[in-house]
Length: 322
Image (cartoon, rainbow, N blue to C red):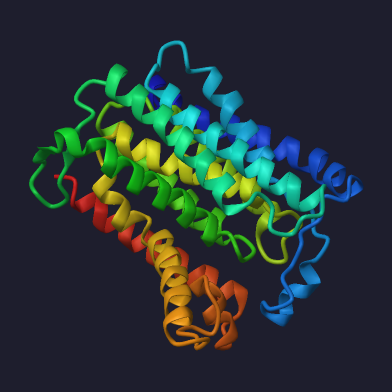
């Protein structure tokens, strides 16, 4: 293995190691502090046994990513907006988790508070991208032979839609043991491969996300010993959206993060149908992973199927780059 290859793998190893060390330390701490998961009574009955499982494990993921990224920040300035989005949305998730778990308010932040925080982080991210990143309004068109389109003044409004949609899609996906971790580690691996191929300097943070999630999965697969909570799921959504923009690939999110998109759409359709029909439901439960559970699928089957779909879509997306 030559030195350059080692440099690519090193962030994965560092982040993996940090997460592996932190999990056995912080998980018992979260349990002692009684930072346990609140489980809705209207969900699948099998989920009731998850009540009390330590949550807010996303702190471990964010710490692993942040510490690893600091080693590369000096020579890789493009990491800054991706790290900002990851930490910024992670803070919003942390506040939401804290209110739910510590203050015992089951709904966490009010909807308007969470949205306001997300809009603020997105606005700061957009300001940075427009003023400090070259050619950020260019977007790679999938399966176009490497052609880009300049969306110019549509950049900011489109960015708000993409970032907020991705972040909340990631949040909705976090509902089964290992689901969000499994889907996002595949997306992070995709971005790592692409960033290396494009000689982008965001490859260290992409590798760090992949490494931290691989380690976190050791404790998050069924039956989970810890949940990432909104701290982790919002942070990961921020990473996916910002990494896509730094690589000029927001259009690829529809492919690689289709699971996120389907989860969001299922909630929107469920709520809309419920209101239009005076109480009828389109799905047995939303987000849609719960629908499959109530149809008789096991948690592990849902996670496996969603992960396989993401893997195939990431491979298709790789073919669509050139």
